[in-house]
Every structure is written in C-alpha cells, then in structure tokens.
Length: 359
Ligand SMILES: [Zn+2]
Ligand SMILES: [Zn+2]
Image 1 (cartoon, rainbow, N blue to C red):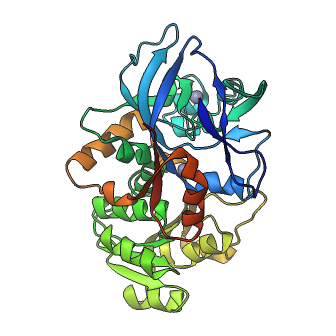
Image 2: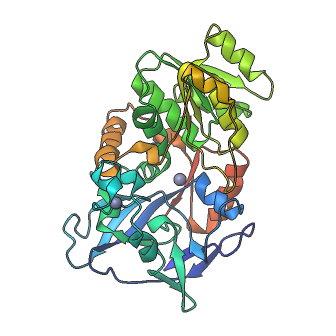
C-alpha cells in the first residue's frame, strides 16, 4: 500500500510502498477513507516530540473495515468506523475506573511497532492509527462504528480534534450553562473547544488568537467576543469583558507554556484553566503559587476526557442535528501526496483542518 513515511525531523514526508500485515486475532484491517492532518503530527515533524523509528504518522481517521482477525465480533467487513488513537484494553486500572482515555496497556505500543514494514524493516504505526496510508490496522478496541449517513471527512475529524476540543469543554472542564469562558488559540482544537462551550450553554465565549482570520472563524463557531492578543493587552481586555472578575474557565489550545500561564492568569478565583495543547517534551509551565489559595485550578486533558465508544456517537448525534459544525472545519480536501502541503498551510495558519481523501 502507499503511505507517507516520516523518517527524520524537519524533512518532508515521502510517499512509499509499505507492507501491512493481515489482521491477527483481535485485530481489524481498515481501508482509509479520510484522514485529518492534526497539529500533533506536526510536533513530531518539527522535532518537538520524538519517535523511536521511521513511522507512518496520522491519527485522525475514518474508514471501512476490510478484514477482521480471529475472535473479532464488534465489527464486520464493510462496517464504517472512526479510529481511536487511544485503544482501551478493558482490563487495566484506568479502564476499570472509567477512564479508558488514560489506558496504559503496553501491548498497544508493541502492536503498533509490529504491523508495518518498509524495505524489509519494521516501521511504527503512529498511535495505533497511522492514517497517512491507504490501510490501517488496529485492535477491535481501537475503533467505533458509525452510521451510514455520517460523511467520512467529518467523521475523520471526530477521531482527534473534535473529540479532544468538544470533550475538553463538556467532559474535562464540565462547563456550566451561562459561564464565561476563554479559549487561547483558535486552530482546529480551539475551534472545537469553542463549539463545546457553545453546546454547554456558555454565555460569554472569548476567543483569543494573534491571527484575525482565525478569530473570524472563531466567531463562526460560536465565540461571542474576540481578542487579538498581538494588538491588545490580553489581561486588560479580559478585565473589561468580565467586569474585573476574570473568566470561569480558560482553555490553552496551542501547546505553548506561556499560553498555559496566561490561561491560569485570566481565570477568576475558583476558576479552572485547562491545558489542552500538546506541550514540547521537557517543557515546564510556570504559574504564581499564591493563587492556589484562591482555589484556582490548573488541569490537564487527554482526548477530552472521553470514553470514545460512548462519546463519539454522541458527537455524531449532535452533528446530524446540526448542532455541531464539522463541515466548516474541513478547509481543504487533499490527496495523500499533498500531505506536506497540508502541514505548510497548517503552519501558516491558513486552515482549520486539511483532510486527505483516499479513493
Ligand atoms: Zn490530533
Ligand atoms: Zn486499559
């Protein structure tokens, strides 16, 4: 099959012929329909995160089941599915305590290193998905079935950005109706946090970015106020909008330590700052210690604190009722060989999401 290979940081991906195994017991082979191009993939290309070996990146995808291994009964060939980059083992402490998004089973890392070969050598399938490829393979517990009426490009985005962003608002922060919230960074994740806050009934949704076109998109997704923090003093603008109180919830959706500090600084006493961005390995976030006496909270987020088999179908319901906008997130539809162009336009801040379409 054709796949985009990542070999080295700061070099373009190359399209190569890669071998994929037949599904082993418990595994499912999926023909890729669409793959989103997410910022987390870019972190590896930029060298901010490291991988142990050559790899097929891509972790936000939907496709059609091609074949199943022995013992698989959740799906059949022909079923339409969204891939999860966090398969659940169903046996570990986290799975059994209702947090499969934190599943730490080592078997998935081992499996992801044993399914693809290129030039006779094993290469890694990123996050048990590896969707910059014509085919993907995962455990039966790494996908969720979706209905016929769900379009594939929109479905793919639920695989990461939508679930992470909407989930950060609904399930991590649990934003209450009538709240005042701020979102720092209006890329793919930030726009979905904005929609999540809108769905939760937040009254004031303040979008913060340094690019005006992104702030315009933020307004289309439900922001009630926008702040260009390059042109305006952020702290003063927040004070003005919130009558000096600060916001109740702030979300950091960039992956920059300074932005996380800012999120903490703009919440009011008792408020919650959620770090959603993927921060560089080795980075530290600094916040003023005395503010914890004001019961300010700084919390993390993995996959929007979701249980994907439960929550992805709920997001699909919201989409099918026109209450969750996925179509406007799809800025460009490209082919696999355009993957480097997709990263360029992401870096330039031109798109909410590029989607690679496979035929
Ligand atoms: Zn992602
Ligand atoms: Zn587990």
